[in-house]
Image (cartoon, rainbow, N blue to C red; front, side, top):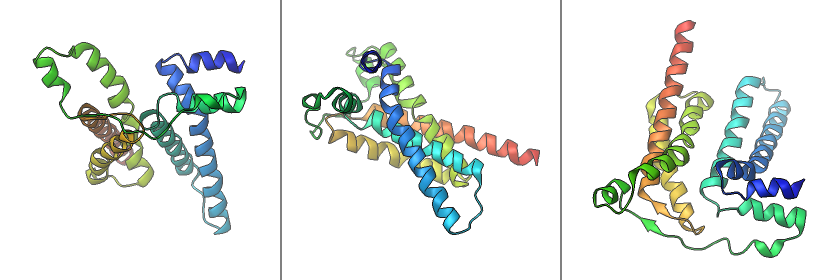
Length: 202
């Protein structure tokens, strides 16, 4: 069964990458929930289950996001290979310096060196939609409805993640920074609209 699942994980598809990150993301969310709730019970604090569930899901999302965009490609698949198949020799080096790309793809499109169609599909799926939940979760989990929190995250999170990528053999890409910012800002706008609608209903 694991070998069949491994084929899907190693297929290079969005589903494969998602399945690689899913176990560790769920484990992180569960660990956070157990530690958080245990701490609240020791303090005899009131547990807001809805808020705690959202926070646990946020931890799941952040763990999955880091797994997908920072760690080397197929990192978790190689860990699973070692754990379940004994293939530890497949892990290979983890830390290595990647590339830096500071020329936006729109410039490359204008000079004819890049097709904007394929780039747009990749950026939309991997760098806008993937980061949209970060902006969506932040105002809801933190309770801060102002734009300062979202905009700070939209600037700082992509820069930090892209810098980390550089040390894991991946690239620091200006396109990613721009699209990540857009995704987080869009998520923040959706969250603000939802929170405002909820406030108006009261």
